[in-house]
Length: 469
Image (spheres, rainbow, N blue to C red):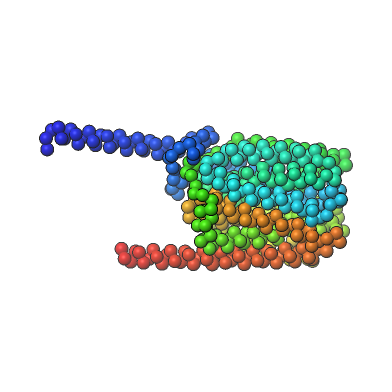
């Protein structure tokens, strides 16, 4: 080979090497400093970033655990507030909206819970596109504003309370619900179940703090509804500010997700995922009955007023333990197994509310139902993550599942209120809710069977491939 040809080949190799280094630097540029919000958007760049490999996840770190702490506060102020609606159900029925039926009042709480959950369909898509900070800051602002607007609602003005507490608070909390859970998966793999259960326990702590605060302010004639609502709004706003400061994403999500309809058609072919989503929906029809009606049930059975006010605190205190404890042994027992066991026990206890008539029965139902209801809620996000092969689709998978589940949340408690009637016939809503919970248990069981069959087929295929190799 002549000398000019040798030099030409060396130049080509130099160009190729420099191009490779440029591509490498461009690829590394997709990882950003976790201390600053993302500025890149999917439509602003043609670069696509693959999800981080499992070995690249830090399994915590300062940024990871601070994000867990912030997500904990988001759950405490959002879904924790929703889980405290039993206090409002009792207060509105007896005092502030006494001109409305129990079913009508239940629509306030059910619409709130529905929007918290169903908003995840849109929030999950936006999270996958890299809009986490917009959802966090916008949701916090709307939630705080709506709570302060609730304090301006007048007695007997149903629409004012419905718009502020039902719609405004629901949308604001819903904008943050799915993203605050999904962002944790950017930092954890082996400890993901533990991290997500810690996050989920925030809603239980909120459902302990809010009822204590509200029962001691709403029912105090020296304070009144307006001051009580503003005090609660001020506390929530302060916690939201802390969450906004400490939460950080690990990577910039610049990968454009596929269209929602095409994703939904692909997910429908996943039988385990479909039955899990169906189980969430049907189970939600009965799940909220104790949360919304336990305090009113205790009062109408003539139990001590002070004890009745703390019945929800008992339930939610045990729910806090139930949400926190599974994370330590979920990897050994299996997320799906814990989910099925908890739904079965919850269904039995909901039907058991037919016999509620004494302090002992309220304590037993509150303690046991609270613990396993908390366990169920804590396992939902890890279960959906367990059913997801491509973690870049986790946001939309969770969003779709929770959006479908929202319909059960929306209509469940109003149906309970209609069955209850003004004569307080408690066995009707308890029986209906218990049967729906049992159907949810059956759906989750079917999901597990399908999941295990799929794993067996994959193992058989891998074994066949290894034999051929």
